[in-house]
Amino acid sequence: MIGEAIKLAAQAIRRNVLRSSLTVLGIVIGVMAVIAMVTIGDGTTARVTQELAKLGRNLMFVVPGQFGPGRASTTARPFSTRDVEALATQVPNIRAAAPVAQKSAVVLYGGENRQVVITGTELAYFSALDWPIVAGRRFLESEERAGRAACILGQTVREKLFGPADPIGSNIRVRNISCEVIGLLEAKGQSMVGTDQDDVVIMPIRAFQRRIAGNTDVNSILISAEDGVDTGRVQTDVERVLRERRNISRGAEDDFTVRDLKQVVQTSALATTVLTGLLGSVAAVSLLVGGIGIMNIMLVSVTERTREIGIRLAIGALERQVMTQFLVEAAVLSLFGGVVGIILGLTLAWAVSYGLGVPFMPNPKTVLVAFGFAALIGLVFGFFPARRAARLNPIEALRHE
Image (tube, rainbow, N blue to C red):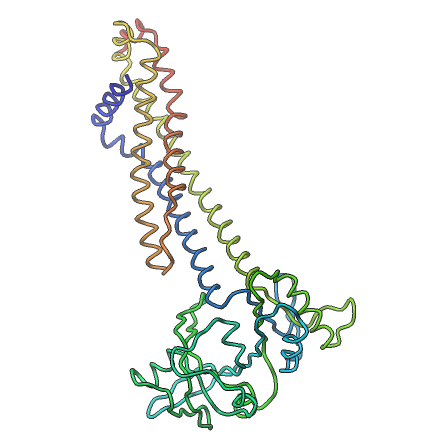
C-alpha cells in the first residue's frame, strides 16, 4: 500500500515539476542553512581549540594590570625575574614558570634584514609552551647567568634571513649587537588572530634586558601547571604569592591578571556553540516556511484533483487510503527537499571551511536530525490537506468541474 502511494506521489510530482521544485525550495534552504551553520560552527570551535592547544598544556599567563569584561585596564608596574623565582619555588604543582619580555627590532644577516619580535626569556619558556628545538640547542644556564648574546630563531626568521642554509653557528645583528644563532625552533604557524608565531628571535632575558630593552622589566609570566592538577588551585596560589610580593592590602584589587588558558578555551568554545545554535535556530525558521509552502501546494492539489478523489472514493477506496496517498505525497516532497538541502549544505560548509582554513567536520547526528525534521515538516503540514481530501463527499466530488 505504501509502495503504491509512493508511486502515485511520484507521478503527481512529475506532472508539475516546476511547481513542486518551487514548493520544496523553503525546505532545501532551511536544511542547507542548518547543516552549513552547524558544520562551520563545529569546525571553527575545533580550530580555536587546536590553536589554543598549540600554546601549551595547563598554561596560564600573568600580566600586569586588570583586563577583562567589566574590568578597566590600569597602569601597573611590571614584574621582575625575582617574582618568577618566587612563583617557581613557593607555588606547588608548577611544571615551569618563565619570564617574558618583548620588543620589536630589526635583525640583519648578510644583505637581508627583517623587523621581528625579540623575546627575552629563560629555559623554562620552552617547557611551558612545549616548543621543541629542531636544530641546535637551547640556552645553557651559564649563558643565561652571564647574559650572553645567543639567539634561537623561529622558522620564518630563518627562511627570510638564511633561506635553505643552516643558520646554526652564524652571527646575526640585532640592533647594534652581534648574536650567535645556537638553535632553531619547530614551526608553529599562524595564531588565531593571524600573527606569525614563527617570526621571532629568542634570547636569554639578561642579555635582552641589558642590550635590547635597557631595563629589568618583565612584561608577562608564563606558568605551566603539572598534569592532572586543578589549575584553579594553582591560579589561586599564584595570585596569593603575587599579592604578597606586590604589597597589595587585603580587600584591595589586584594590579595584575592571571589568565588560565583552559578557561579561555572553554569560554571560546561556549561562545562559538551559542552563536552556532542561534544561527541554526534562525535558519530552521525557513523549514517552517517550507512546511507552509507544502501545505499550500497540497491544498491546491486537493482542489485540482477533487474529481479524481471522488472517483476513488466512489469505487471503494477508504478514507485512510486517500489520506495516506496525500500524506505520502507531502512527505516525498519534503524528503526530496531534505536530501537536496543536505547535499547543498555539506557542499557549502566544505567550501566555507576551506576558504576560512578551518576543519571540515560534518556531524552525522546533525544530518539525521535535519533530515528527520524535514520529513516531520512534510507530515505535519501535509496532514490537514490529506484529511480534507479524505473527507470529501464522493457525490459532491464527482460533480466538481
